[in-house]
Length: 116
Image (cartoon, rainbow, N blue to C red; front, top):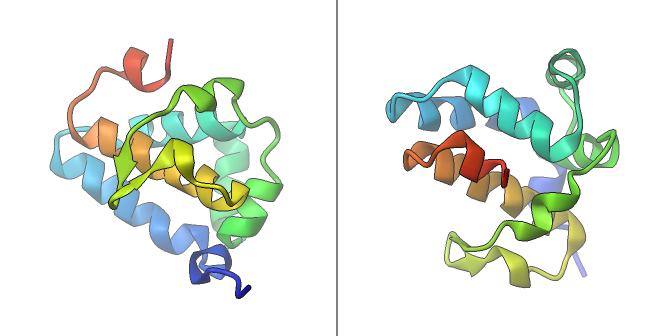
């Protein structure tokens, strides 16, 4: 089976779209970074290094220090796909991130987004 194109897409090329989506709804880049760090275990410095190194999504998630165990609590639909039903592990991680950014843009409280 062919690998999905998003896997080899630069994370740094998509990141500004996450920030723009959040900022359009009066949320901040810092909140986007907090969500990404919560999900992946990257420190803010490690996240910036990944952006500076222009890694692809596959590498970004493969190098993640500690994927948050509470990510399994993320439920819902992104682009018509239920995130908890995605079978391909890497695609599911990407969809989890998409869902968290969507929740941020919809004005959900950070405590609820981070499953606290």
